[in-house]
Amino acid sequence: MKKQLSILSAAVLSLSLSASAQALTTGDIAFTSFNADEDGLAFVTFTDIAANTSIYFADNEWDGSAFNTGESYSMWNSGASTIAAGTVIRLIAYDIATPSASLGSLARVSVASNTNWGISNSGETIYAYQGASATTPTSFLAAITNGTFTANGSLTNTGLTDGVNAITLPSSSDYYEYNGLRSGEPTLTAYKDDVANIANWTGHNGSGNPDFSATIPNITAFTVTAVPEPETSALLLAGLGLVSFMARRRKV
Image (cartoon, rainbow, N blue to C red):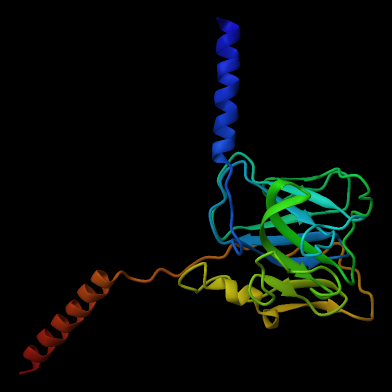
């Protein structure tokens, strides 16, 4: 009986963990930094991410139907707690054997013939997606490139659109980061256009070769400004009108 109960408990735990994982959709996250010197990334989530949710990151190029080989796959897991919408997560030292994340965990995914774990300062495209495995994406979430989405990895059949939920950095960028609004918008969705606009990014590309390996990206959360409900606005206007009326009566 004890053995049966133990098996049942394990099954219930497995079902619980599976149920807590979350299917995300295109544009639910967006990259906010790219650092080829540190081999680091950061992304913001525009929706709450449930506990035990996994997202894959690949710098193998997508050809419209499959990934090529020779580069790398990693998997980020949200961990035991829900991560609130607006949170920025930093992926640290993506290229080492034991990478880490500011929230959750990051680990390499071992796939045959993948040997290059670093992020290049030219012609590099990184995809974020969910899937049955690292090599079988079912839902692309975001992408970023310091090359082009034609020569260095395609957006075909990903559901992603350059300038909407995919970002093209200046050619040969080694460090670029979103530096636009993180507060003041009425909804988190409103920030999607801000982040996708390359005019809101700053960084370095081209000559000079400064070292950004120790640069830490901004991981300040994105927040919204509450907009009063229509009923609240109506009551406020009515109150102001009454105050104005009483003030006029006192003058008479």
